[in-house]
Amino acid sequence: MIQIKGAVNFPISLDSTTWIFDDRKVTIDDLERGVFDGTRPINFDDNKEWNRAILEGQTNPPTLDSEIKYKKRSVLDETFVINMTPFFKNAEPMENASTIKLSNKDYSINVPMDLLPYLFFQFSSNGKRLYSDNAVDSFIYIPD
Image (cartoon, rainbow, N blue to C red):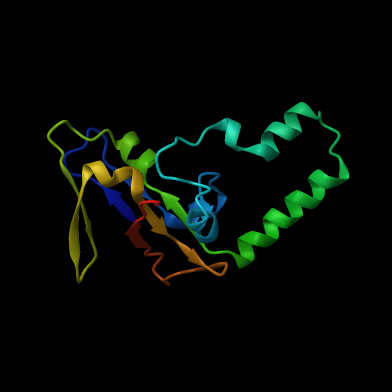
């Protein structure tokens, strides 16, 4: 479990195993290609599959079925990351919060709050979780 606690109004615990179902995840390849730049919020407009289902009605065209199958297969093969901004925003950091402390049993590092839009957690690699205890790797990605 990942805990967001300390100088926040709402301490929360996160289960990284659920992120595979989260539409806010991106592949590491897409991140490197600049599909997600770390500064724009993800909203319903970004979910093309959801919008197409609404616009095209309940009768799914053959291409939509194929796209859904492709996305399901990609979950088994891709390497995914997720931006941490929405999770920290939900915890509502207090005004005096200036850093995010990332730690495990062996190591800790402080990340300035202004880098939050660029803070990502990698939770899978080639369709598999990274660690047997569901731990994640964290990194700062600032696009060129």
